Image (cartoon, rainbow, N blue to C red; front, top):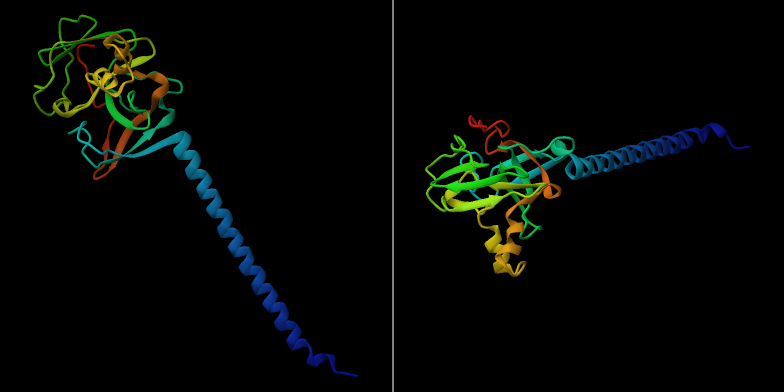
Length: 220
């Protein structure tokens, strides 16, 4: 009869090897689960909660600089309406594959007149006090009048001398063939509520800067 005690070391080695394999397998599965959880959380966060965007142009300078990275909240307007002065991210009306960022100036049902570098809401005698503008507004600053449709918003960039905003979108719609007449093209001058992706909250690169409450309209 063979001495079973001679087999014990080999049996123990196999047992330890199996335990080690099982431990490695558990660790790998744990990392896989963690990876899946992270992917799901990131997907849900970016799809329904936040917008992480890089600003490609200087149309919002100096409030937001070119190449700044910012965070916006998608849920900001689930229960509230956009307010004048909010900085929003939205689908560009003339090409909805592009995301634009501008400041809300005109609200649904209002009239917006641009005259001599001033903005007059609903026929006001005094223009909006826009202390976020970093320089004198001299380009395309006169002769505009808009009636903002319901559920739509009129938006402008803070860098008025270099911003493709609501002033020009009707002309762009005509140029691109989206509209045949000036009257038809006017609808592209505004951002529809359901095309707003979110409200810009802060920049985190190249510097940190809060983007809420950056406008104080004394005439409102």
